[in-house]
Length: 173
Length: 173
DNA sequence: TTTTTTGGTGTTATACTGTAACAGTATGGA
DNA sequence: TCCATACTGTTACAGTATAACACCAAAAAA
Ligand SMILES: [Zn+2]
Ligand SMILES: [Zn+2]
Ligand SMILES: [Zn+2]
Ligand SMILES: [Zn+2]
Image (cartoon, rainbow over all chains, first blue to last red; front, side, top):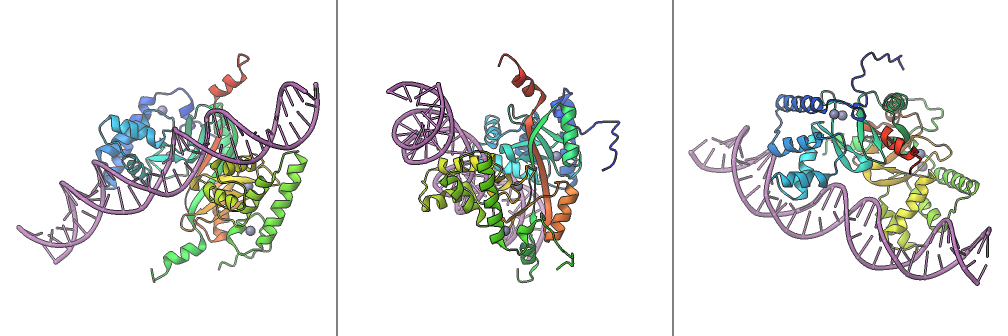
């Protein structure tokens, strides 16, 4: 590992420090808008509004919490409403699922594809996304800077195993 | 077949390669037995049997799948049966939860506390635990050796944020 | 233009995952 | 004997997620 030498600590676990959250919202929303139009994907009202709701705070929101909000705002009351919006937002990389909480957060670094790393408080369920390479050492350092005490952690990588990759390649699909 | 020249790759993602699985079972079960008696914890029949069931393969098993098996074997049919056994096994570090799958696997390295890292096939849901330090680079290398194509990954760390830690310390609990 | 396809939405129903709470039992110490 | 602790049996319920089908509009193909 390099001697990280960070003069500027952008991308640190800001969510757990005081900051201008209006900035977070504007920055992320603008970037999402830009990328959606660039990628020619359909950023419909319900999808946009779902992202806006998630952006209201850095806490992770359960799907049914989001659904409740969407319903109050007139976007429909049935589970697929929320899950479809979330599927879209996750595909675009605008939202991550925090698996440990079965809950969702807006991505704070939507300008780059990345392996997200989260600091999750087991007590208040606040969530801070870091943009550092998620090595245990780097994460520990982020945590220290945020005053966060890591108790346990895990990493999960999803993909295709050798056998399944072979199947997908097969000409007789 | 890559010519990776593997003299001995202990701790690699063995689960995704041919291996003597009887060895896995004996090794892990013995170690669990030893640690349970060392730590004076109550390794009751239902708990032991739950571990044995999970050890039957390296696939992740959902709680209700485990429950079904426990029921067939006469250990009770209600959800708490499975969840209590799983809670115990996770506390002892004998089992991990694979969050992405809401499913559980026996730990392949129960002799040491660690940050588990998993390679999860999205197609067949097979799971390989690696015992390397879970850096993205190390994980990529493990994946390559196992013929596994990582498509996305994440890291989650749970603990206490600064504010919640302060509360816990507070004398006026 | 007409037809077809595609993608998004509305809705119902259902499956899967996880926990609270209380009663019963065994054990071991005061 | 009384009490505390830890494990188990059971009921009821809360929370999470998806399948499936009907409907519609806009884009693409004919
Ligand atoms: Zn913010
Ligand atoms: Zn992110
Ligand atoms: Zn094995
Ligand atoms: Zn493990």
